[in-house]
Amino acid sequence: MEHTRTAKKDIASLSHDIKTPLTAILSNTELLLEDDITLEQQDLLRGIYHAAIRTKSYVDVLQKTNQEEDFNQEKIDITLQQIVEDVNQSLSPLVYSKEITLNYNYHPQKTVKCFDSLLTRALINIGENAIRHTSLGMVSFTITQDNNQTTFTVSDEGVGFSKEALTHATNMFWQQDKSRNQHYGIGLAFVSHVANLHRGSLKLSNTNTGACVSLVIPNTDQKL
Image (cartoon, rainbow, N blue to C red; front, side):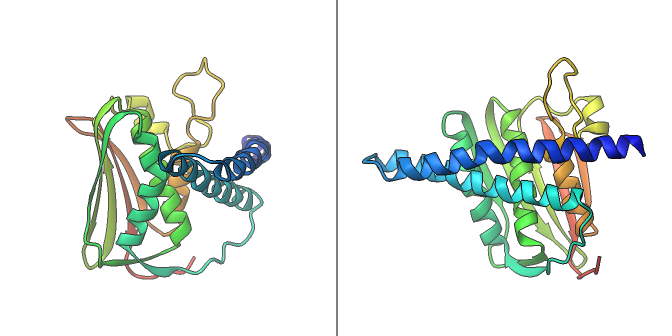
């Protein structure tokens, strides 16, 4: 019980602390977009702006979950094409200065019934994690469907998960390096939360070339 109260306090403090710099990022980016800048600079700034907007919505979800409010968002049908476009819009600026290629394998016309903003944010979090731990190579998104479920698989050519990370990386505030004061596990912890909201599952694994994360959600609508 004491651990739960401490975690809730940490989440509340973190959410508050994040919103302050986010507000500054959004305001300053809007001002910079009004300046006489190149098209390339505009694209980069728009990437920063949209990433900040999505992060703000992510923090709002954390706050709502932390307050134990009823989650009553309705699932909608959204095309895989729209999901990929939203994910790519946020991730493309992150690989601009790195020797990383983003690769997407899916059927654009297919749809998935989901909490669209949460699912997109979860996939962006997985992608950000893959990019962060990859120096060069490819980060691949593969989306497959059968009659029962939709599987979103993200694989990279990075260092892979440590044995400890495979067990604890989805725990809120888990840190790989205990000497650093950072909230390392918050991204994958959010992904795990989104998987649970969909009555799905999340799996972390390693391949011969790097790390692999699979987010699975059922195709049938299940009430919370």
